[in-house]
Amino acid sequence: MTRQEQKVNNQQQELGLWNPTAPIAEKPTKPSDNHENKRVDPFQVLPNEILTDIMLLIPRFDIGVRCVLVSKVWWNKILGFAELWSVLLLNNTMQGNSLTHLAPYLGHCLKDLTILSSSALNAEAKFMEELQKGRYKKLRSLKLLSAGSTMYYFGPTERKEELKTTDIFSSWELKNTLTRRHIDVGENNMDYRVYIADILQVFHNLTDLYYITTTTFYFSSQSNESEKLTTPHQHLINLQLRGYDIDEEQTELIAVNCPQLRRLFMTQCNYSALDTITRLQRSSVLQNLEILMFNSIDAYHPPLPLLPPTAATIEGTEEKKDKNKKGIRTIYINTGGSPTPANHILPLIYNNRYTLETIVGCFERSMDTSDAQQVFQKYPDFKLPSLRHLTFWLNGGLKNVLLQAVRKSPSLKWLEIMDSGGFVDQTLNILLEMPSLDHLSFQVSNAILEDSEQLLLLFKKYAQLSENEGCSLKSISFQESSRVMTDPILKALSNIQSLEEMWINGYFPNTSIEQMHQMITKLGNQRLKGICLHAIEESTTSTIVCDVLSGIVNKLSWIQLRRLSLLRDRDVRTLVDKIEPNSSLNLLIIENCRLVTRESINYARKKIKTVICDRPCSPYILSAFNSNYHIYPDYLNNK
Image 1 (cartoon, helix red, strand yellow):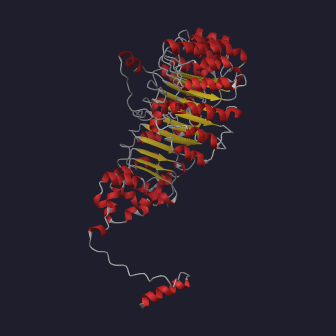
Image 2 (spheres, rainbow, N blue to C red):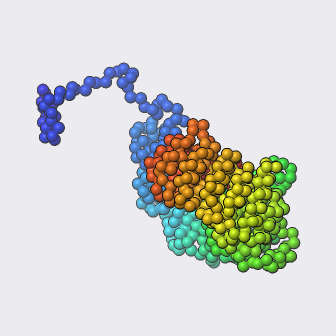
Image 3 (cartoon, rainbow, N blue to C red):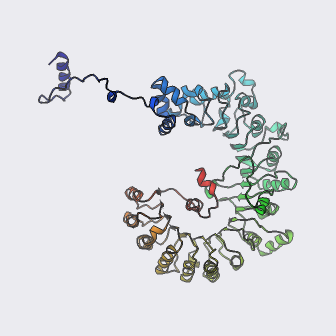
């Protein structure tokens, strides 16, 4: 044994690793020159497309700290992958700081930059420094959060005390390339205030702007509040505002200075802003506006997509002619918020009655039947011939006004009634006279048993249409309507052969378990492709899942089980075990079922393509997933 080997053995003995009976390890031999023993650099042999796909799977921290520092070849190759660096998110974590040394080398490919917060000592400041040097000339989208408190670091390094906000923006050299801007100015009370007027004055080609402030909203500095821009901005299409006290004066400044607006989101607004929009439309301002979201909460609707710079048209002479009409097509008013007074919203709806396709809103219930009659006297031609989607809640007479406006319209396909005041005969009578819908949803917590007779007639009508014409109701959702649902109504529902999706929410004391089972089974053997069970009677959970759904599971495309407190692992496993290799089921959603464990979720994933656990899915997403007659096709595509 050599001296070196003896030294190693002594060290092993001291560490308790010495084994006197073990053979002494042989000295490693020098690798031969054979080709199989050579190490191959993947960056030398693999095509760029494969290398890019590999790099996209690696965290940015590892790329910035390890990969690019392997060799000069790796540095040049990785920084040359445009797809890898086209979109970049920076924050104050170690991951963001690991990219600091790459900032000067990404100008050839960086198109979308997001900075969560900034200071002069971190990676964000370095990227802003390169931005000021004009290196990011391909940048199209810039998102800045808490920018109001950090504008000091975004400007040139000299004469900071003399600079205006427009000077800082101009120093970025992006005025000809930037098209999308998201800026959160926070309290906006520092030395450098950020106003929309400053942004529009510098970035002439901006098409999308998302502006957030936690204080009172002002279009420009208060000293120049009444002034317009030198030239109205001709490219801004999408504007989203989150601020406080957006009143009629601010709304008019936005409209006058942004004449090409097609999509406008405004929160924390005074109702007078609606009156201003109506008045400006009548005076040929905001003629291009197509989507208006007013004081709405995102959680109550799917995100509406950004509109392209040019309006799309559809095939067909008449349809194309209607599509080119000027006016608002989509209105979201106070979704999830306080009711909107009818005197502020009705004139706007009437002003856009020929173009409106979607209305989702929370309206006041103070309007009675006599008030509704006065509306039709004031607006004799109050019809909504193009309306396809209508959702409203917390409403009284205004509900009937809107239903009367679409009473004979064949275009309405999606109707949701959410009213804690319950059904009234007039509402059900209108529904009986209306043409066939694709989707009907009602949530009437105070419905009474007397409403059942009219509701039964409605479902019998849809059942007859599905037999004779084959074109009838495709999906239905009934929630918190326990007292109005009876066995005859469930039987009538099961006879609607066109039903493809169903949402069942709540406990129905006036129905039998047997009739509920028969309805689901019969629909499953017809055309049913998706079903949601939400907070149904606890004692029936296991039997419905194990006995009823298991019998039709191979014919369904999706199943949603939500807030089923007694749903257990064995129920989920029983359902999954019934799935055959050629089954159509490819989506299972289990939400807020406290007794279902991770083991059963993983068990389900062995047979089902997509299993979602504890993530809310609205009917809009599920309809888009099923690809039948979805209302918001762009939502799923943008995810």
